[in-house]
Image 1 (cartoon, rainbow, N blue to C red):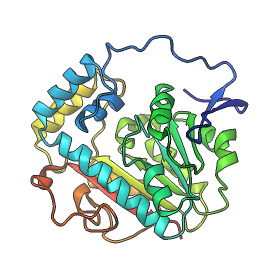
Image 2: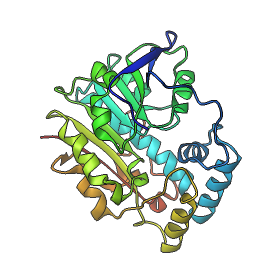
Image 3: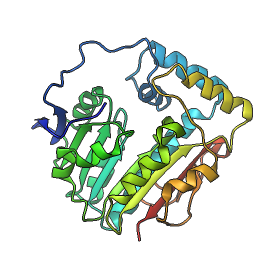
Length: 295
């Protein structure tokens, strides 16, 4: 779902969050709880409660096929935190987080505004339910400009011209563009590489691309095939890509160390979310992560 150029904005004055919507947008009167939703499945992997029976059944089947899924979700959340800290530590004060899903503790705004209270965060998701969870997460928390817009990654031009994004982010200044665990829900025939290139091209020098992506490289062929099959019945298909197909998403951006690596290996001892040792079973986390800067 995407927006037209004209949008209305609702604001929760308690939280500082803004929810941008089209003039004809109406809150959904009923959730389709019978179809597994990728965001709610991810919430289940993280131990959350914002999921329904269909989500839990699909997630449990996926875990049976690939037992490292909950660990992947946790290490992905930790990577997000470390990468946001890195970007904020470099002086980046603008964050665009696309495909945020259901917010949870340790979300982009929480980490960025802990490092830099003036950081501005725009969440982008195509599910209007995200706004409800976003307000709940931010209730009673200190300000900082945090907005949520309803738009679809498959239409990057609509994201870039969205009035709420344009009002919150100055694209002539460095931005951290976050595509964390979302591109593996975009098929090649939907223009995955074109989508990311469009977004990269809009960024100013000094911007950062923060990206993680599911891969078959560290899982058995059977587990990867079964996981892909399970997600065919969910709200979006799962497209696992090998390293050779993930690296091009970064274009001519320059990797920061350690480069594009297996997810748990991206600076595990860095920042506030440092760990003293890698978690047991980390070798089975079948995903890549990397951060790169626009020269």
